[in-house]
Image (cartoon, rainbow, N blue to C red):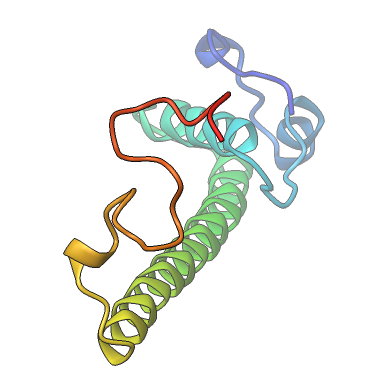
Length: 123
């Protein structure tokens, strides 16, 4: 998507001309998001808009809001998955009766070395 910064004085007045400057398209990444936000900010900072500019602003706003909603849902889903994984892991450890003192390195019967000593080269 082309950047629009510095084009405030040269903004097209018709919808078709605005589309040629920056075609409205689905936003898929942060670059597209930033460019759409910049165009929306540029249009909303103008004291008056033509009918074409208003229509273009509405179109860009719909695309912008759709991306925000999708990103929010993904962030919420990822966050809930991580919390569920942590919670499940803690429940499993508790069910197996593991205690923190049993998890320290070098405290298990099968370890050949003592904590604080290099295990490499020793048999």
